[in-house]
Image (cartoon, rainbow, N blue to C red; front, side):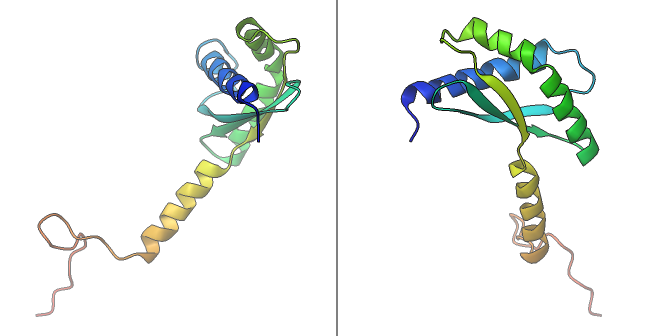
Length: 130
Protein backbone atom coordinates (compact mmCIF):
# COMPACT_ATOMS: atom_id res chain seq x y z
CA UNK A 1 0.00 0.00 0.00
CA UNK A 2 1.24 3.48 -0.80
CA UNK A 3 2.07 5.86 1.96
CA UNK A 4 -0.07 8.89 2.63
CA UNK A 5 2.76 11.16 1.51
CA UNK A 6 3.02 9.45 -1.90
CA UNK A 7 -0.76 9.59 -2.37
CA UNK A 8 -0.83 13.31 -1.56
CA UNK A 9 2.04 13.92 -3.97
CA UNK A 10 0.22 11.99 -6.70
CA UNK A 11 -2.91 14.08 -6.23
CA UNK A 12 -0.90 17.32 -6.27
CA UNK A 13 0.89 16.23 -9.46
CA UNK A 14 -2.46 15.41 -11.07
CA UNK A 15 -3.80 18.86 -10.24
CA UNK A 16 -0.69 20.69 -11.46
CA UNK A 17 -0.41 18.74 -14.70
CA UNK A 18 -4.10 19.01 -15.56
CA UNK A 19 -4.18 22.76 -14.93
CA UNK A 20 -0.96 23.32 -16.89
CA UNK A 21 -2.32 21.32 -19.84
CA UNK A 22 -5.54 23.30 -19.72
CA UNK A 23 -4.10 26.80 -19.32
CA UNK A 24 -0.39 26.92 -20.21
CA UNK A 25 0.41 24.51 -23.02
CA UNK A 26 0.04 25.92 -26.52
CA UNK A 27 1.02 22.80 -28.48
CA UNK A 28 -1.64 22.17 -31.17
CA UNK A 29 -1.15 18.41 -30.76
CA UNK A 30 -2.44 18.55 -27.18
CA UNK A 31 -6.22 18.91 -27.06
CA UNK A 32 -9.19 17.07 -25.57
CA UNK A 33 -6.99 15.63 -22.78
CA UNK A 34 -8.13 14.59 -19.33
CA UNK A 35 -5.67 13.53 -16.63
CA UNK A 36 -7.41 10.59 -14.98
CA UNK A 37 -4.89 9.63 -12.29
CA UNK A 38 -1.18 9.61 -11.43
CA UNK A 39 0.97 6.80 -10.04
CA UNK A 40 4.09 7.89 -8.16
CA UNK A 41 6.97 5.53 -7.38
CA UNK A 42 7.71 5.04 -3.66
CA UNK A 43 10.99 6.97 -3.91
CA UNK A 44 9.11 9.80 -5.69
CA UNK A 45 11.58 9.91 -8.58
CA UNK A 46 9.06 8.88 -11.23
CA UNK A 47 5.39 9.37 -12.01
CA UNK A 48 3.10 7.76 -14.56
CA UNK A 49 0.46 10.21 -15.68
CA UNK A 50 -2.57 8.39 -17.07
CA UNK A 51 -4.48 10.50 -19.59
CA UNK A 52 -7.66 10.02 -21.55
CA UNK A 53 -7.76 11.54 -25.04
CA UNK A 54 -11.03 11.82 -26.94
CA UNK A 55 -10.80 10.98 -30.63
CA UNK A 56 -9.35 8.40 -32.99
CA UNK A 57 -6.22 6.40 -32.22
CA UNK A 58 -3.99 8.57 -34.44
CA UNK A 59 -5.04 11.67 -32.51
CA UNK A 60 -4.35 9.89 -29.22
CA UNK A 61 -0.82 8.91 -30.27
CA UNK A 62 -0.09 12.41 -31.56
CA UNK A 63 -1.31 13.89 -28.28
CA UNK A 64 0.87 11.51 -26.26
CA UNK A 65 3.94 12.59 -28.27
CA UNK A 66 3.05 16.22 -27.62
CA UNK A 67 2.66 15.58 -23.91
CA UNK A 68 5.96 13.72 -23.72
CA UNK A 69 7.74 16.58 -25.48
CA UNK A 70 6.33 19.05 -22.95
CA UNK A 71 7.24 16.85 -19.95
CA UNK A 72 10.16 19.10 -18.97
CA UNK A 73 7.94 22.16 -18.72
CA UNK A 74 5.36 20.22 -16.71
CA UNK A 75 8.09 18.94 -14.37
CA UNK A 76 9.19 22.53 -13.72
CA UNK A 77 5.60 23.41 -12.81
CA UNK A 78 5.53 20.45 -10.42
CA UNK A 79 8.83 21.55 -8.86
CA UNK A 80 7.27 24.95 -8.10
CA UNK A 81 4.31 23.32 -6.32
CA UNK A 82 5.82 20.33 -4.52
CA UNK A 83 8.77 20.77 -2.18
CA UNK A 84 10.65 17.47 -2.44
CA UNK A 85 14.27 16.47 -2.92
CA UNK A 86 13.58 15.10 -6.39
CA UNK A 87 11.11 16.24 -8.98
CA UNK A 88 9.48 13.13 -10.45
CA UNK A 89 10.18 12.32 -14.10
CA UNK A 90 6.89 12.21 -15.96
CA UNK A 91 5.85 9.38 -18.22
CA UNK A 92 2.52 9.63 -20.00
CA UNK A 93 0.30 6.61 -20.64
CA UNK A 94 -3.04 6.34 -22.36
CA UNK A 95 -5.89 5.37 -20.04
CA UNK A 96 -8.22 2.99 -21.87
CA UNK A 97 -10.79 2.92 -19.05
CA UNK A 98 -13.11 5.53 -20.55
CA UNK A 99 -13.01 3.89 -23.98
CA UNK A 100 -13.75 0.48 -22.46
CA UNK A 101 -16.63 1.79 -20.35
CA UNK A 102 -18.24 3.35 -23.45
CA UNK A 103 -17.89 0.05 -25.31
CA UNK A 104 -19.42 -1.89 -22.40
CA UNK A 105 -22.31 0.59 -22.13
CA UNK A 106 -22.99 0.16 -25.86
CA UNK A 107 -22.97 -3.64 -25.52
CA UNK A 108 -25.36 -3.47 -22.56
CA UNK A 109 -27.66 -1.16 -24.47
CA UNK A 110 -27.79 -3.67 -27.34
CA UNK A 111 -28.45 -6.65 -25.04
CA UNK A 112 -30.82 -5.27 -22.39
CA UNK A 113 -34.49 -4.56 -23.19
CA UNK A 114 -35.69 -0.98 -23.40
CA UNK A 115 -36.81 0.60 -20.13
CA UNK A 116 -40.41 1.82 -19.85
CA UNK A 117 -41.09 5.56 -19.75
CA UNK A 118 -42.63 7.25 -16.72
CA UNK A 119 -46.13 6.73 -18.17
CA UNK A 120 -45.58 2.96 -18.36
CA UNK A 121 -45.20 2.65 -22.13
CA UNK A 122 -42.03 1.24 -23.68
CA UNK A 123 -39.58 3.65 -25.26
CA UNK A 124 -39.77 1.84 -28.59
CA UNK A 125 -43.02 1.79 -30.49
CA UNK A 126 -44.78 -1.56 -30.50
CA UNK A 127 -45.48 -3.14 -33.88
CA UNK A 128 -48.95 -2.45 -35.22
CA UNK A 129 -50.90 -5.72 -35.47
CA UNK A 130 -54.07 -4.76 -37.32
